[in-house]
Length: 484
Image 1 (cartoon, rainbow, N blue to C red):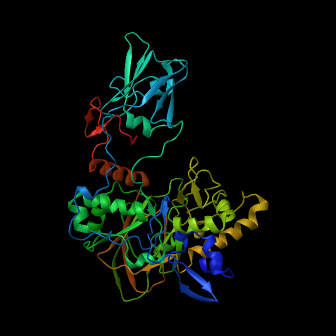
Image 2 (image 1 turned 30 degrees about the vertical axis):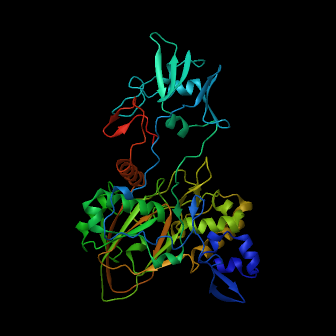
């Protein structure tokens, strides 16, 4: 819990230790009394961080009427032909490109030849490489390089000579020596706490179903916040399934494809009971956990309870990283075995059997990519280094205190007609106990399906980033796209 972390620390010290993004909407204990405190009230709350934790930053993002147009979809800067193209220089191993007097990119000769995307080297329909990488001499060197308005022109020694033209925006975007930060606004994931209840991300069912821009807006909000409601959905399974399939193929698991269930223990999982469920992510026992989870409460009769719980795992992890870096390190490196053994016909365990950490990081950037946490599905801890065992349990307690802090928990009572889509790689979900008969339907969608649909619609509703005359669009896409 955040309150416990800051207990006994002076207010000034707490502010110095925590960035403003952590303190926004956070309860600080002062003389053992909980109170909301925002030392930067009224000031600008957008930061130049990859993650923004402004808890109520969802304001003005809900969709009802009027409908946005394509102008509302973020568009990257459109590169224009350069009046004075960048300088280029050739040496024995690399071609250097000077973007300005102090910024130069260097590209190895073999890399340039391997990445030619002319029609001879790159299929313009399938977008697959045609050039045979293994026929390129390891010591290949261009016979000539030239800076042109359309891009870097490279002439390769062959008979006849092969000419490649690399668009400037493509080279800059793919610069690796050094990596050059992208121009234009960067997408931020908004990390949130309980204050998200004031204005949760929402789109209208009719907008999603009737206009691809509405579907894009739904997916963008899931990408930004980790979840998004859809309002005014017909309260039946058919409409919910149709809505789910707008994103992509439904993933079939041991629970079926599209599921419609009550608390009858028809499947060997506590979700099919009336018990309370602590915050967790689903399918931690799969090597590839399900990506999105769709929920729709169709009815709840003759009883009460069953409130839904959402917790932003990235938000909790970000605070943990700043206040307890040693705990963050342990939870991001220690593998945790998991299982699903409630169905007689199935026994799921991930590969490798040692499992995966609770916090899974990008191996290149160390950015948090995935939260895998379900304490109920944890298997026997028998492969952990003995000296780390007690430390890991201590770290797990700290993680749980942050997860269960009132400042992290967003409780909402779902009602028929409201669907919620949850990024299962980021947002944990749970529920309170209930009685009566509760009927729920929903589905899993793979993360790659969701990301593909988001990428395709983003590409469709923006100005194409290829401006050079040499690039030809096939099915609305260029081989010189910077998206792949």
